[in-house]
Each structure stands twice: as structure tokens, then as C-alpha cells.
Amino acid sequence: MILFDVYLDFCAFRRIVVRKDVIRRLNLAEKQMKSSLCVVTLWAENVPETVAFYRDIIGLELMPHHGPDRVHLKMGENLYLVILKGKPSPATETTIERFPVVAFRVNDLDEAIAELNSKGVDLPPKIEEDAVSRWVFIHDPGGNLIEIAEFVKTPFA
Image (cartoon, rainbow, N blue to C red; front, side, top):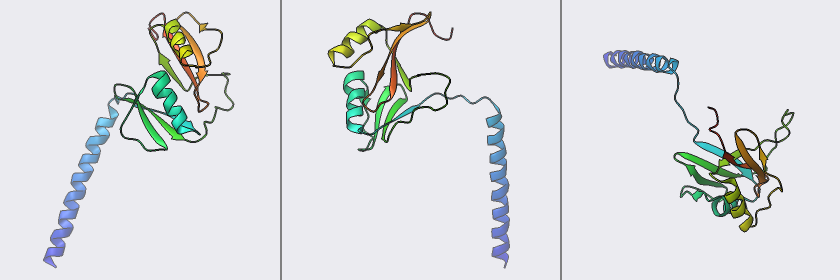
């Protein structure tokens, strides 16, 4: 009986410790969370063809941790593009007619277009632009709308 009572007291002590730890975590959560984007996910019915596009045409590095229906490509420092098997679903009831699921920033859009053309990518005949950037939209083999953009002014300044 004594051992059982001690065990209960030990469990009560652990509950108090856990509760204090939870309170400490809640207090930390009240401070502003610092975060950054780390994963972008796209769906494609033909994963190998879509992976080849992002690896060979766009120039992303294939990461070693992947499987046949879930492939990781490195987009930048601690940022990955994941290609999953499935059919992309366009947004419904949107007020914007078209918007890319992901955009790639380039230093020189004309140079990027020339390189994409040399690799057989079908590009629109017109470059779109506004006061901040120039861009073209293309579809990857999975049907996802992507953007290739050059910023002529610093965005969000």
C-alpha cells in the first residue's frame, strides 16, 4: 500500500511539472512566433515527368529523401518543393482569373525565357509587367500554373 501511495504522489508531482511546462510554453507562444516558409507542395498525375521539368528545366536540385510518389526538390536554403502524385485542383469561386501556385524569381527574365525556349518549353508570346516586375506564366507538366518573374524594383518596399 505504501508503494502505491508513493507512486500516486510521484504521478501527482509529474502532473505539476508538466502543467508548469505547459504554462511556460503557453507564455512563450504569446510572444510573436518567428517562422519562414519551408515547403511548397504541388500535385501531378505524372510525377517523374513533373520532377524532370523542375530538375532539368527549372534547375532545382533533387533531394535524397524521396520516394516514387513523393519527391523533394531544393528551392533554396531550407525551402523545398514536394511533388505528390495526384491531380492539381484549381481554385474555385476566385475573384482573380489566374494566379500561379508558385513563382520563381530570376535576375534577367529575357535570359530565362531564352533558356526555357532552348529547352523546348512552350511560352506565351507576351511578357506581362507592372511597375514592380515583369513575368510570364507557364504550366508545368502536372498542369500547375507557375510564374517566372524579374523584379525591376524591390518588392514590398
